[in-house]
View 1 (cartoon, rainbow, N blue to C red):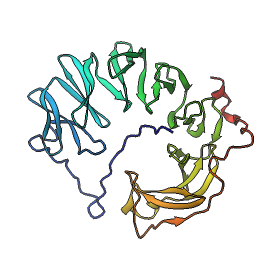
View 2: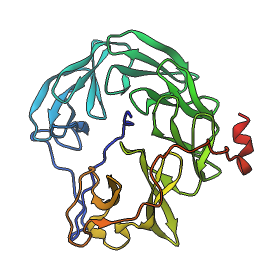
View 3: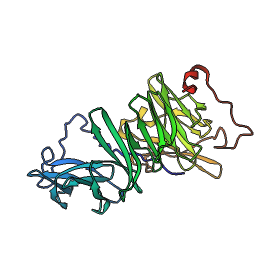
View 4: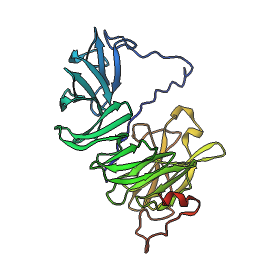
Length: 328
């Protein structure tokens, strides 16, 4: 299963001085509020980003070390990459200053799928237009009205000019489309995808055929390699988490989030490990790492069902109050 691209946000917690206002540190000779245009990070790299001086842009890390000279005309950050412009052409550079996409694009690189494709946007009089290119400059999907962004290396989220949202592949084939409050990719398994959508503030997990698998939770996270999603449910103002499989079947009952009890571990959540039929809950931090915390040791749990067991027959699609969703 390909992992959806997920942006990683780092949370700075200050248990003893949470009320203090902390100013971002300058990057060497680059003043954070004047010369640092944007910042990002990537695996096995320090924080880096686009800096500017005297009207020219370049690349530097958070110590102020210049990684690419300040000789570019414009610049911006993507997740784990930066895009720069020189002589009217845009290109894409990674954390190690390698050129991923050459400086051949007339418009700014808006998104990168992490492999071999970029999205280019063009703001015109009648709205935003988006196109998909290979990193070699080949046109894969010509400009169309609306905003595109990568949800994984194979699927894109779209928000069309007629206020419909959904997902398409990089050839422009529509996988899911409708008028939703919001949409989210849970699993991009080809032909058997899972999506979380909201209609009238009701969240539900559906497939590309709009079959509903569950609508019992306020939020769900992308499925992991085990085919299990952590789900969130607000109960009397308290956050509870549980785990379901790709059929929407509850695997481990909902339990109180550790954040409910201890602000010291704000952002940490329970995660599930299943090994040979054994069930263990452990604490996971924002970066996805297991945490050893004596207040919240690993705990055994009981599986309510075998995850992702092939049903003897497919569940009957649940439409109910959402009939208008299926007619679109």
